[in-house]
Image (cartoon, rainbow over all chains, first blue to last red):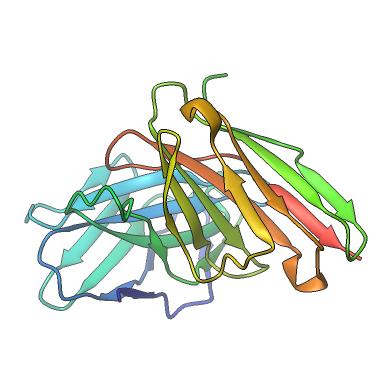
Length: 119
Length: 111
């Protein structure tokens, strides 16, 4: 079974600075997807960024970028130019890329990292 | 609003009562998922539907839990004889392919 580990329960960053969140995972598969989701306080979870394991290029979405190290099974998220609205719980998630209809390709989540942004 | 919606947003019940939650997925999404999230933790998978067929259930889903998705549209999650340990956020997500989109969740408190 796949497992996802986020070793930082909480990270604090100054507004306009950069913060990096770590995520490691364990899998025997070679083809899979990795995601970062953001969950603001009392609000719904939204997708931040997605990475396909077969792509060597790291995904980027505006101020958010990832450092995907497949051999190390590491998938960190960098938030640049942090804004007050970035304060939230961030979850790393894994999904197999093999389309298994009976399994549904469920997400396996890490425990989350709380990001605090100081003005 | 064309996102995933869930109803109710909050539910307070007494131990032993039955509760039912509803999820309306994004209209063109054929896959629907239920997750449970306890305070300070990541979501854990409960069950999955492809269209109207329930194709996978987690071991977390005891026999007090039942889920349906009639006609492959909305889904309901029922918990019978609630226990204090059932207190959690229940999240619904839908997808067409790779990416799951989440609803706002239903927060259940069992007194």
